[in-house]
Structure formats: structure tokens, C-alpha cells
Image 1 (tube, rainbow, N blue to C red):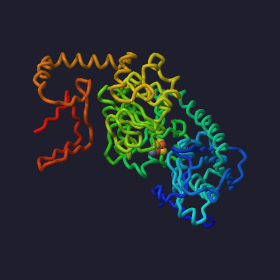
Image 2: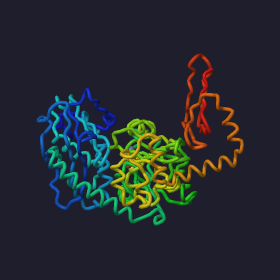
Image 3: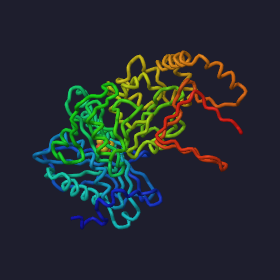
Image 4: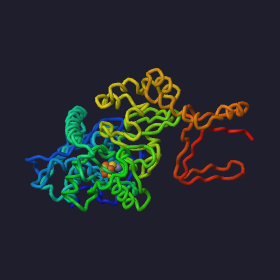
Length: 470
Ligand code: SF4
Ligand SMILES: [Zn+2]
């Protein structure tokens, strides 16, 4: 079947990573542009593969090129609603090809071709051909498939414009529904190959964290293949409407994660946030010093107020983990009226990159838009605090309230502080009670032969953190 293709094609290559040293070229990715799109059409010439722009043999080793993958499919039983889910499989199927690596989705794709594949004579036509065969095998309802691969910069730019419009059409449709309007949610376990405890729960208000699959897409996919990776979850008993906790969702999470995760809040980063695989478009992260939540997306290249970039943060909360204070999410979810509603939604957001803010401006409450800083306004905790105070962000009121409550509970607070005056100390922050650490397992190593303390499933709250020299 793959005899004309000069490299092996098999699911066994799915986990293959192509590192920079072994890379012939990079296609799309963070340093270039790219996108992928599947469209159901009426007139598709089966097996046609078109390459528009330089082919691999015309590329220079070590360079990065723009890249577009346009897949047109035809079939009596194919519905428009299946486009998103079929498109999402591009990631997995591309990775069956030895020497070709594909990451992410939509206009975030990032591909690499290995030197070995290039030396074996691999060209983009082979990628198109392999994908045509794999897609037809995976989805027998595809009767004809044709693939166009773009590497010419202008063509890729025009293609991205088209994809943006198509993604928006899909997303806008899902915006018309909300969680209360439906009796079923959906689960997706497509990412369990690398995040074994992860299940995406997709509801009308919570598009999957990869941003590529919404409730309508899931409905079509579950109908087409009820035993496939996307399945129905009866909404059933609502345990907490605001947090978004459902008995059946909890049961599915427990079942699909082999008991690792048995509770999930769909609309909060606290308590039991949604697990994260690694494909999320953005991460919501708690900033304990200000008791607020920041957002960072994949395209943001600088450091977040936590002092780490997106990549490091993604590393801490991906792989199917449930990490309190962090939640991977799609940008589309930030357009939902239920966006982190249990945490006060946008009232709790105290930092986000300018590009996201601009793209979501119609969905951020008008009275808050100017009060949320971006990297252009503030970056450190100190700068953010100053900005929030100047703009009178609602979090300031919240901080004052918390402080007041603590004083009421603990009238000796001031006395205690006086006793500590002579001791050099590090203050955790402005919040009187702030969670300073949460980890499923945290080890404080012994540095001089003393004791080693291991906290398991512990949450640590501290009014102040004092480190004394012995
Ligand atoms: S991120 Fe979620 S919805 Fe998207 S493919 Fe993975 S499991 Fe499915
Ligand atoms: Zn994923």
C-alpha cells in the first residue's frame, strides 16, 4: 500500500520526535506560519496531490518554511460537521510517517522532516499520498480525497486567511448553544496516547482545550463512530452548576484515567480543574501574590508574571495531570459566558498577552477591558499590582476584603508581626492567606544530612513564609 513511499508508514512511529540536530527542515511552527484545514466538497478527484511552492529537494537544510495542508474530502455519508474531527486526526496520521513530525492543530501546526527521510528521497508528494491512504483507511466514509500542500509564502498566507474564516464559522456556531440547552456532553480520549490520564470534556460552553473540537464536532463524530475516541456522556446529575461539576463526568474521568482523577470542575482553576494533555491553546494560572489568575497562550514568547515562559508552564501541567491553580484551555472557551465562572470569570483575570486581549476584546466585559494589564503594561508582580491599583481592578477590593476577614478571625495578627520584627523574613506577598504551594508530591531535600520531608497531596497555606539562618 505504501510501496511508492520511500520511508516506513506505521502507527509505531507516532511517538517519534525529530530534534534540531536530526532535522532537515522545519515547516510552519512558532518561527514561521502555517495551518491545516479539512473541507467536505462535492467534486473531489481521488488521490490527487498538489504541491504549491518549493518541494523538499528544493529546500535548504536547517531552514524553516511556511506550510499549509489542505485536505478536500467527498463521500455520501460525510457531513460538514465532521470536518473538525477529521482535521484533528491529521496530527496523528502525519506522525505515522517515519521521519515526519507534526505537532498541534489548526494554525498552530509545527512540522519537521528528518535528515534520514530527506536522504531516502522523501518529498511532499509522499506525505500527501500517505495521508490520502491513511485518512481513507481511518474513515471509510471518505470516498475521495485530494490534498494540496503549500510551501510558497504568499500561498500559505492566503490559505491561512481562508482557514481563519472557516475556524471562525465552526466556532461561532457552537457559541449559539450553552450547557443548559443540552442533555449530553462528550468525552474525547484522542490524546491518551501521550497523556494516558487525560480526557477532554467537551460541552457547548467548553470547547476542547486544543481549540479544534467543539460540541457539534463531537456530536457528529460520536454518531459516525460510537466506539471511537469521542463518546457521549449523559449530562445527568448536576453537582455544582457554577463550578461545572457533574456526577457522570466525574465517573467518566475516573474510568478513563484508571482512577487517577475522579473529580473535575469544568469552570474553575481551583479545587479540581480540568486535566491538561499538552495541546492546549492557552494556560490559566493562579498568581498567589495577588489572588488573581493570568492567562498565557502558545504564541506568547516572553516570560509570564510567574517568571517562566509558556513552554515551562506547559511542561508543569501537561501530560494528563490535574494541577490545582493551572488549567489548559482553548481561546474559544474564553469567549464563553461560563469562562472560569466559579472563579469570577474576567473579574479574576489580572494579566494576559496583548494579542489575546485584542482578539477577545468583544468578549471581555467592557468595564474590565482597560483594567486588565498585558505585557505592554506590566510584567512583574509589583508592576501588575501597581497597574491594578491605578485602574481600580475588582481584585483590589477582593484583596482588601480578604485582609479584613483575616483580621476579624485573627485579632492578634499585629502582635505576631511585631514579634517577628527582628527576624529577617521573606514575605510571600500581599494576600494575608495565600496558597504558596500545591503539588501532588513535593520533596524538600536535605542539604546537610538532616531530614527530608515529603508532602503527598498536601496544600500549604501560609500567612508569611520565614526562612531563618540556623
Ligand atoms: S485535546 Fe482533547 S479534544 Fe483535542 S484531540 Fe486531544 S483529547 Fe481530543
Ligand atoms: Zn491533546
